[in-house]
Length: 82
Image 1 (cartoon, helix red, strand yellow):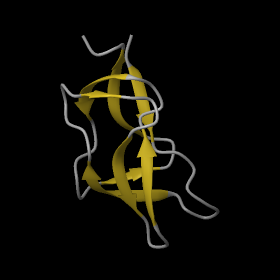
Image 2 (image 1 turned 30 degrees about the vertical axis):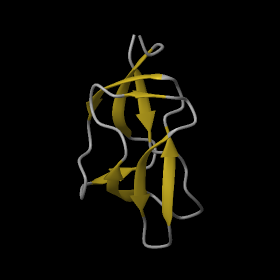
Image 3 (image 1 turned 45 degrees about the horizontal axis):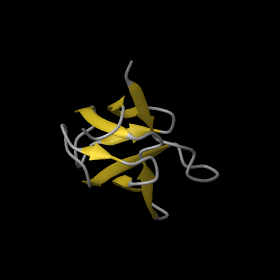
Image 4 (image 1 turned 45 degrees about the vertical axis):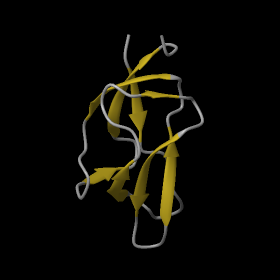
């Protein structure tokens, strides 16, 4: 079962963010606390952790694109690195 990496609440009045940099690519394994993506709003820059250990299966929002708060950014296949 795939887990969705969700853009979390970033602060009062922030409804969307732009993807600045992906720190992990499809096929790469990440740990739960790893920062996998950096997002930018008009107020600040934020690092979003994976939230679950596993392999990045698919990136849904590319660098330079906007995502709404609560929207899925990527899919992660839970598991440990073989």
